[in-house]
Length: 569
Image 1 (cartoon, helix red, strand yellow):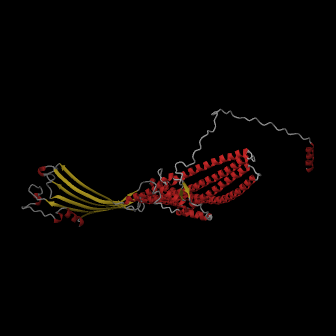
Image 2 (cartoon, rainbow, N blue to C red):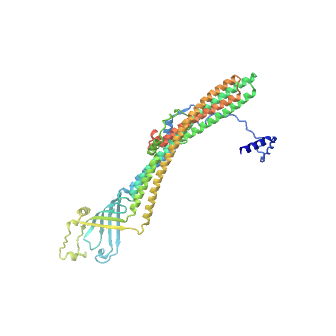
Image 3 (tube, rainbow, N blue to C red):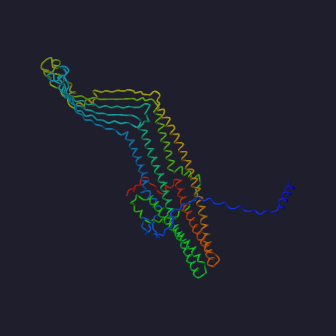
C-alpha cells in the first residue's frame, strides 16, 4: 500500500506544471438608486454654547449619595403612592373591624288613629269613633361578636290614650326591656364571614407594607445606579476633555513642524481631524451628563416645580469600597430572612389558610341557638266610673261605686319602669334553628377553590425562593466579574499611559508618526473610559448585592411611615 502511494506521488510530481489563471471577478449587481435631495450636504451652523438645558450652569451643587437617597424616600411620587396604598390597607383593617361595632339606634314615634266603632263596648262616647294616640320611644344596641354570636338589647316606652267607653286606665304607660342572643353551634361558630374579613384585611395590610418595602428597595437601587452613572458621566467629560487637550497639543506641534519644513502638512490635517472628533466626544459626554442628571432628578424630585431641577448636580460621595465577598449560601440565607418578597409570599400562604378555614367551616350544617328574654312594665291613670260607662253595672253593683285597682298598676312611666325592674311580667324563649342545603354545592366548591389557592400560595413561595436564589447567583457572579474587569481595566490604562508617553518621545525624536501618536492617544482615552465603566459597574454590583440580600433597607434606615411624606410641595 505504501509502495502504491509512492508511485502515485512520483507520477504527480512528474506532470508538467500548469499556470492557474484566475477567473474574472463577477460584475456587481447594484440596485438603482434615485436622486434624492440633489446637492445635499451637511449645513454649516454656528457652534452652540456648551451648557445643560434648564439648569444654572454655575455654581455646581454638590450632592451626596445619602442625600439623594433621603430625598427619594421623602419625595419620590411612586414611593408616595406605594406608601399611600399601605395606609389605605391599614384603613381597611378598621373598616373590617367596624362589623363588630356596637350599633346604637333610637326611634321616637307618634301615632294617632280614628277607627269606626265595632260594638257598644269598643266605641267612643255616644257610639262615636274610637280615637287613640301613642307617643313612643324605642332604642337599643345590637351587634355581632368575633366568634359569630349576634346580640341585641332593646328598651321601649309607650304612652297610649283612647276614648273607648270600656276603659279603666287612660292613659297607659308601657315599658319593655328585652335581650336576645343567637349562638351558632356549627356553621359560623369560631370562623365566620366578618372574622374572616378582619383576618384577611390584617394580612392585606401586611402584604401592602411588604410590597411598599420591595418598591422602596428597587427605588433605592435605581437612585444609587443613577448616582454612579452621574459620577461616570462627569468623569467621562473630564476624560474626553483630557483627550481633546492632548490632541490639540499634538495638532499645534504638527503645525509648528510643518511651518519649519520638518513635518508634512498632512500631519497637521490628520491631527486636526482627531481634534474635531475629540471635540464631538466632549459634546456627547456633556449630553450624557444632562440625560443622567434628569434621570436622577426624576427619582428625587417631588414634582415639576421642585427647585432641584435647576441645580447643576455634582456627586460628592467617594466610590463604594468593595466588601469582602460573601459566601453564596450566606447571601441566600440573608435574602430569605430579609427580603420583603419572601414575607409577601408567606402572607399569601396565611391568606390561603384563612380562606381554607372559612370554607371548611361552611361545609357544616347551620345550627343556631336562639335565646330571648323580655321584662315588661305597665301602669296607667284610673278613670272615674260613671253610669254612662258600660262597665259601671258590672263593677259597681252597689252605690257608691268603688273599684279596687292594684296600686302597682297606678301611675306613670316611673311606676311602669318599677314593675319592669321587678320583672313582674317576664317573657323568655329558647329555640334551635337548623338549616342545611341539599347538596351544599356552593360550600363544597368554595372549599375546593380554597384548597387550590393554598396550593398556589405554596408554589408561589417556592418560586419566589428560586427567583431570589437565582438573583443571588447572578449578583455574586456580576460582583466577581466587575472586580476582575476593574483590575484588568486599571492595568490596561496604566500600560496605555506608558505606551503613549513612549510613542510621544519617539515622535519628538523623529522615529514615530502622527498616526501612531494619535492611535496611542485614542487607546489611552478608550482605556480610561473602560476603567471608568468598570468602576461604575463595580459600584452597581455592590448595590445589587445589598438589594439581593435585603440589607439595602436597613442600611438606608427606611421608615415606611415617612416614605413619600414630602411628595407634595
